[in-house]
Length: 489
Image 1 (cartoon, helix red, strand yellow):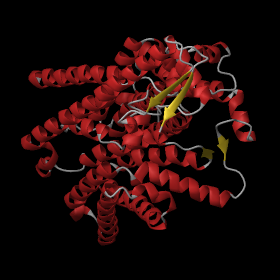
Image 2 (tube, one colour):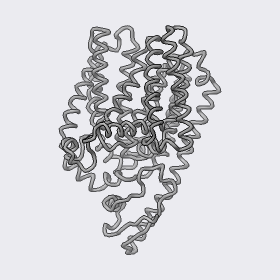
Image 3 (cartoon, rainbow, N blue to C red):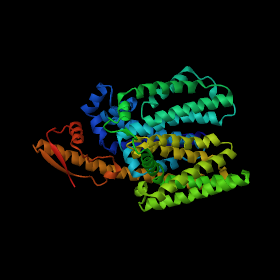
């Protein structure tokens, strides 16, 4: 037991060190440049009024873009914590390196807007990580037959969850709404099951409510609903058509590109079905079997489509939309039937319900971007780990055997080293390009032509487009504001 703890701590430390190197290599891009300049300070001095209510998220971004050491350490700590938290949902299974693989195997467009973008990381990775801290508490409650988790904790524990509720609900809006739903569910569940309320949940809910009031009192949300905001807006006119397009975007970003996760989920669903098939009624066997095998076939089709790069057209493809609907329905039915027979219904359905709550909000708000679905991606991983708990250990050698563990370790470190190579190249090219612009500006050049980097798809908008975006770049790097930067296509 002691040796295993030492081994686990060593793997966490090694991951943290490698992530520090990775985040050092990831450059500042797009919004980072404006947040790190006087533009960000102006927003701060105005209390972010009319800009947004993500007050904690904005403060994190301002710190990350002004102090590179804070950026490197904060991002490395949060992502390491995310990996550690995911391991806590596995029921003792050895899945740490599987989590590393799945995180680094996310779609490039999602990685570029979350892991490889300080502004995206501050909002989207931080929010899901803090939410998992609260969900660890929820799962302790769900797994207990006696209300030990409901016993009064020390005051510092209650205050800690209150502060977590406040902080976590001032980062990004769709997780703020998820936090409300999680609190209501947990309080209702504990009362119905134990006839008692948990002080921790009440404190967390109070913190969330305070943050909701603070966040949505910002005038920007009134502008969004009135249609006067320059960037965001709600669905108006042609509602059915707009909702159809919104669903297509959600399906495209949060399902159709998650090829590897869908394949792993399909395999775990099949293992869970085979493990508990005998405990199902004849009708349950039919519905669960059709749903599970249908989902597995759909996952294979998605992988083929993804390999052929056809999913980019998903928003216009009726066939892919139909596939997405069938896979969602199949997952809900199969997971619901199997988990109910194992008396782990809430544990397995909670990630699915969380995905639906997170994604449904984007039916009504535009624009919808890939980074919005990082939370859904993590919830799919959480669903995989909950279904793993339904599979007996003797049937788990495909993931938990010594050879499987060694293979996962090798693939995980290969994935990290591959990303280190990618971002080292980007870092080198970006640094050289910035030095070139600075030298040209110091030499008195007023129009400077630059070329795009070779691997720009791995970072978010590192080559800017509009003149107002270049203004942030010039101030951030100390370039004469009169210089015009032109991108050579």
